[in-house]
Length: 200
Ligand code: IMP
Image (cartoon, rainbow, N blue to C red; front, side, top):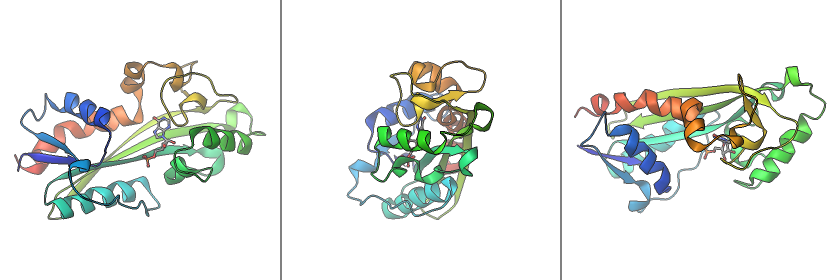
């Protein structure tokens, strides 16, 4: 077993993972879920862990191969952790970044800077066809700005300022963001664990 199915159709994400894994698992062949004839797994969980595990275990079971999946989002303190697992569809339509940002800024309009704490969260799950699994979680603490700024990134990046910085994650280069991001942390944590877990 030296193949790993990655639950993304995005070749950029697969290339990123490949770069991170060369050092830890040089013989592992990464395959996109797009190579298999599978329907998208519905994200019905209420936690990032549940959704990442749901995707990874479903794909591992259906393909008979180890599978890696992630779930991510932003948890805002003043909204009791919302949008959380609903981050991509907070304003209704899936992936409407501008509408999602507008909704969050409206909901936080009366919240002063000291109450605008938030975390970006990324959970990555690795599952085997026999249902064994493991998860890792990466977080990035910060505050929600009052106005969007920056052109890089995606999602809530234009309104998220990480603690210790005076710019948003949308004003960072992709490399700068990777070094501190929730996703970068989770990927660097899981990278050395994949090969031993799969049993290669
Ligand atoms: P997923 O594809 O279900 O993991 O949804 C992730 C959603 O969370 C994205 O659509 C964004 O709205 C938000 N999100 C996750 N990570 C980031 C990030 O690094 N920057 C900005 N928004 C993010």
